[in-house]
Amino acid sequence: MSVLVAQARRLRLALPALHRQAAAAAAAATFSISTSPPSSTSASTPLPGPLAGYKVLDLGQVVAGNFAGALLAYFGADVIKVEPPGGDPLRSLRVLDATGTSLWWRTYGRNRRCMVADLRTAAGRDVVRQLASKCDLLVENFTPGKMEGWGLGPADLDARLVYCRISGYGQTGPMAGRPGYASVCEAHSGFRAVNGFPDRPPVRPNISLGDTLAGLHAAFGGVMALLARDRGPTGVGRAPRPPAPVGGQVVDAAITESVFSMLEACVPEWVEGGVDREPSGSTISGVVPSATFRTADARWCVVGGNGDSVYTRLMEAVGRPDIKGPLAAFLCICLSRSERLVKSRIDFFRNLCAKVVAIDAALIVVDTSCIGFRKIRKIR
Image (tube, rainbow, N blue to C red; front, side, top):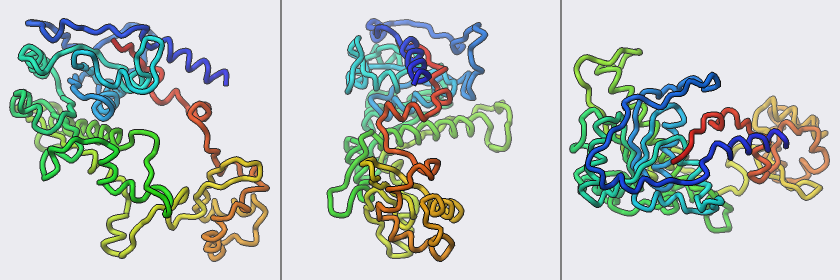
């Protein structure tokens, strides 16, 4: 626990004490921005990430856009965050810190330089045009057509700019103009239909999974577009930047499609096999034993023993060597639904299980040194 407390203190010290908003930026007639990413002479500064030297203009808001920008910043990109007057809405969502700033923003908004520009005004749009001319990649998640209406669409900006767009249903198609709320898009994608229990309404995880997946796909697509741009038309090997300019691409990341891509084999199972995967509670259909069980001491325990060798060791650990082996594994389809499997001998297969724990307990298990806690830069 002392290690967790120390990590939390380092994280808290790395965060700013107060958000300072650049209110005059939207009306600025001229401005300058360094062409070099932030640097430090500290001996403890980690090596630059693979995206060091790339500049990103982040116009994204709330969850999906901010997560895409955060991912690019995690790996070394110099991300310039443009917020509307009053700040990004994520700054005020859910739990707030002592300064009135959302801890969600502290998570997704870090590692970037922030400024304000009102895109509803000509001066604000001009600021974005000038910034875009100095950047390699742009991220936005406005309703499709909004950026074009402001004269800030892909055709209006530098041809080498990689343009990452996030929306609910994509930039084209009959549903493109609809607002893209992740909760609804998750239902459209089929994700909700396979979650929950058969006799109850579909459920959603208590996180914004659809938004986050869309942000992940946008960031990944943006990096692929940068590779294609900078490797040249052949796209072979680690080629140097081609002498002739190669244009950027438009990345169209829809929440519905991002979540749909997580459905594994649900579609071919239905099309080719006529099998409709239904919700299965705490299990996954056809994979056993992989479920949540109630133990004798009234705790919940997740068991993952769905492999021949692991299953064999699991049966030995719980004192049932008589049902191990390839043929006996079929019996586990029934036994996996029985709490008797784990009630009495849980200590013997501790390495095969994980308690269902709250967020604070999960931090003790996760090695936070590998997820960016050491690379936090202050948010302005």
